[in-house]
Structure formats: C-alpha cells, structure tokens
Amino acid sequence: MNKTTISALMLAVAVLATGCKKADNDPSTGPAQEAGKAIDNTAAAAAQNTREGAAAVGAATERAAENVDRAAERTGDKIENAADRVNQNMKEAGAEVRQESREAAADVKEGAANVTNKAGKGLERAGEKMQDASK
Image (cartoon, rainbow, N blue to C red):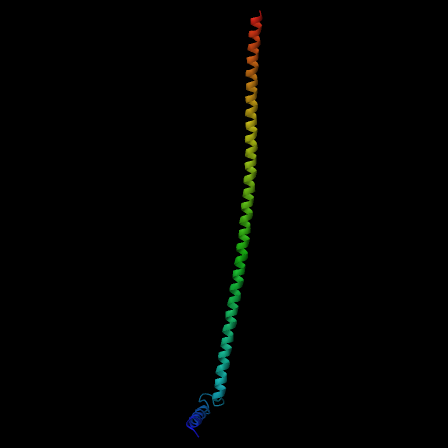
C-alpha cells in the first residue's frame, strides 16, 4: 500500500472511533442522528426565516399599494377642486366682462346722446342765424 491509502485508512478509523460513540446526554441517539437533527433544525429555521421575510415583503408591498392608491385619490381630488375653481373663476370673469361691456355700451349711448344733443343745438343755432339773416 502506498502512503495516501494508509493515511486515508487511518483517518477513516479515527473518524469511526470518535463518530460511533453515543451522546452522553441522550443514549438513544448516535452522531449521525444528531447531525441529521441539526441539519433539519437549520433547514427549518431557514425556511421559517424565509417565510417571515416573504410575509414582511408582502405586507410592505400592500402598504405601498395602499399609499399609492390614497395618493392617487388625493391627487384626483385636488385636480377636481382646481378644475372647479378655474371654472368658477371663468364664470366670474365672464360675468365681469359682460358687466363692463354693459357699462361701456351705456357710456357710448350716453356719449352719443350728448353728441346728438350738441349737434342738434348747433343746428338749431345755425337755423336761427339763417332765419335772422333772411329777415
């Protein structure tokens, strides 16, 4: 036999000698059972941590979706209110323009009446002068 084979056999014997000993705290379980139990416990803990992490991510996603929904709702309300204010402002501006147009028309009418009166008086004076000149 070569050196590697002898070393491997010695290692196997050492492992068997220490590995076959029963645990002091539980005489019914051997090292393989304890190792299997440790692996099972580790796998169960990893699975539980994964489930908890997934649940936390799911809850955070739901909260984020609810926040987005509320923000969209508030934004929609604000847009609606702004549109209502713009509409009201346009109505008020239209009423103001109509009122100013009426006032301007009344001023024009009054101005036209004044011009007509003055023109009529001027014509009347001219007519009187023509009558006086013909006498």
